[in-house]
Amino acid sequence: MSDPAATILVVEDEDKIAEVLRDYLRQQGYVTHRIARGDEVESWVRGNPVDLILLDVMLPGRSGLELCRELRTFSDAAIIMLTARVEEIDRLLGLELGADDYICKPFSPREVVARVATVLRRTMRARSAAPKAGGLVLDEAGWRATLDGQPLDLTAVEFKLLSVLAGQPGRIFSRDQLMDAMYRDERIVADRTVDSHIKKLRRKLADVVPGEEFIHSVYSVGYHYEDRR
Ligand code: CA
Image (tube, rainbow, N blue to C red; front, top):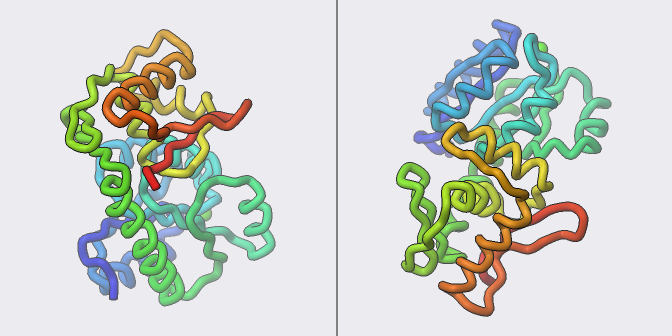
């Protein structure tokens, strides 16, 4: 049933809840890691591969809401928010945090395990399908990108922009979100506006595959990436 290779991060400050969740998830073959404080999550996610994050809303150090928004700017891990009241879910949905699912407390661990499996199936399928569809391959470690097998000669900033956009096809990123994602990578020094980098990136993509548009702009909002149809 479950994907035995998946790693799940449990962000929950209440020890008892965290332990029960981890027990159930481990029984399903998942690898789990637990963090109890909101302000320790970001650096951990940056340094460790993770497939899904169970994220409590009320946390010491930093709120789950803020974290969810931030994680979305650089991580493609699935996120399931845990919230204390069912009425709160409507409000959370309205905030457009980008979470994949919401679970209300108190929950049965079985329900959580079932929702985790569903979300993982969905997100892992989407992820493995994404690079093939557009013929775009990003080698994050080597900062190399190819499109239909042809190398794209990208600057570090352009590579980062493309990896953020293509990491979540269809999702609209604001210029601020893109800027944040770039500057948080300490290897990058960007001194121009997002728009001029996007322009160059588009030109380089068009050099390899003319007549196809991969990066789309949404007037006054930002940009999104679409795989080739
Ligand atoms: Ca809590």
